[in-house]
Length: 378
Image (tube, rainbow, N blue to C red; front, side, top):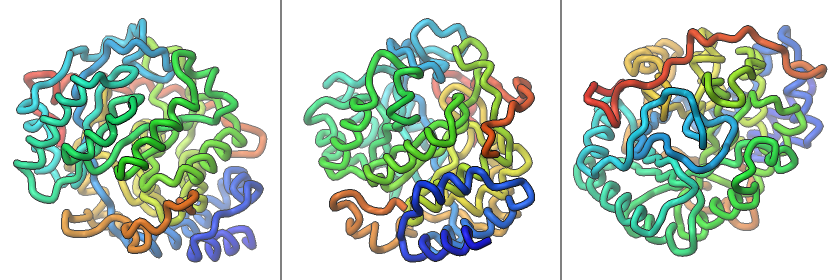
């Protein structure tokens, strides 16, 4: 296909596709899907070889959130039956992180529910970061604490944080349909604060919330303008008890097209398959490794992932290798900070998303690891 040859050439030169080209990727047929994966795989291998970075989530504070994000099982008024607990102590969080690191993770992602941290919360997380860093050589720590106030990103950086995550989630035009307690602009502001403080910015999206192809293109091109170093691609986990519990529109093929589109738009950025891969990609997860160079190991914030050993086996069986702590994730030109001036290149069917069968059997609320007495999945 001329389209795919053009996209490969652009990706190898770190040039973004046009919006029309990105939309065309989402509109490719199932017959062309393997060609799409192969083309995007060439771009992925150019910048990241066959390495897969493993990340491990530690939910520092679960549930009890005052925000009304429709996709979230921790939202205000949630009836999901998830684990709910207040802040883990630094030693508890460090033990949880150690399990993921022992399983092969390179980065620990410290996440807390809520609108945003108080200064006291930042102090608490700073202590956790220091504890994890002191006990684990070479570990990367990413914080995800919600909307940041002035000076908080700098304090996290001083404490040893390497990165900060705050996702845009969906397009600006549809953001008000998903959340009303904060704005899209609030999220953009927090990503910019992380950048300005010298933290590696991590910002991505959630697919499968009823959005159009145009919405997906809008949010991915907006992410490209923000120029994060990593872009997590979440696939909505429709947890019972949330407003989006009936949104079962994704198919494995649709998910692969979305990942390929993100890779073409963000050719030289860490693209991470985040929540929902087991639920929506299912047996096609190994194909997704040809598009993304990063995944989460083990469980998610409130739902279970597949067994950590199964993740490791999948990576090896697909011909990839786990990225070690002494390997630099980003290409040299990005690792040196050369792509952050003025926004750099981070880089389904046309009739709309198919209605997929609801697979509630694949959604399991997390009952192990952080906040429990049971061993974590790593």
